[in-house]
Image (cartoon, rainbow, N blue to C red; front, side, top):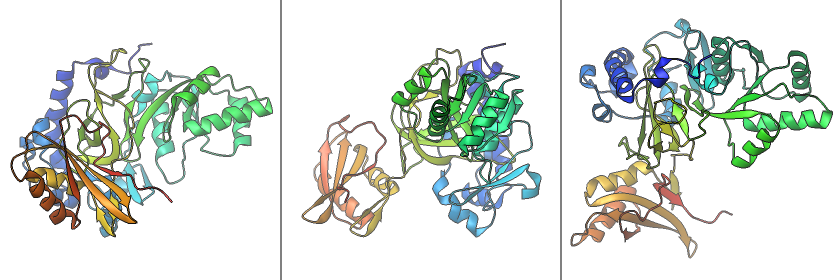
Length: 410
């Protein structure tokens, strides 16, 4: 049994990049058969989009916008070229957001994430992700079955019956949230049920802090984290190296400054933007709303794709200030107006029973009248007055925050 799922995982980074961008123009052409994507992409020439610089010029589509866009043209808002009946399954996620599933054996491309966690042919998998209307259960189910595993479609909850099926089928592996894994372990311990058969796990959908990781490990379960969304399946997965999460194949992942489509430098925290290579369900620069950062170098596990630090928070930092919504896009617009600005953070506070705004700016240079000019831009763009504070390069934290709401709660 090999350590890697297939040869794609160990090809050179240059070969992977060349392959992805050689396939991208055809996928863009397919996407533009969908009326909403044709409008969104503004008549681009797909043949010209052959590297990351060219890709970064295309507009970002924000996942947060999809519910409203889909409502205008149900079910998919005109962003899917085919008809709903051409897909294998049809789902809805909170929002609501409507998502189709392809017809292949591993339509979400997620099998390699489970393989990296040690799932192997013949394993029995207790899958506790939900199967009702949302895609989570099927993302893991199809991945496990593509590997040759048998799946118990348990779904979440009903702990007593979960104990019964574990005792009967003796699953070797678990898939679900880390929270529910803890519930199952505690339930087994309190009832005297032997669940030592479960040796491996993939967890997603909730925080898995080091304290809980250690607690699970002490009980003989080797658990790996997956970063997945209902739109894309597994985007990145943890490996035996335990150093960040390796990006999935057949995805082009960018990290951009929140509120923009501008890629950040390696190591800087920003928003995850994904382009897939599925012509039946294309997603072009989909901003999923989560923060992460690219890690330098390659994984010690031998996989050569780039790595991310995992989930580092939410990118949607919209704040309501004095009755007005202020968004990261507006802060980004201020930076575009003034080339001297390297990085911005709008800090929202409270003083004398009123909201305050302080725009903290890392700058390359401070020409005469600079503070007044930036103050004027802040007021013009947000319709609110605020203070501008000049900082040296590198002074702001690397946490992806564009708007920091520091008002006291309660």
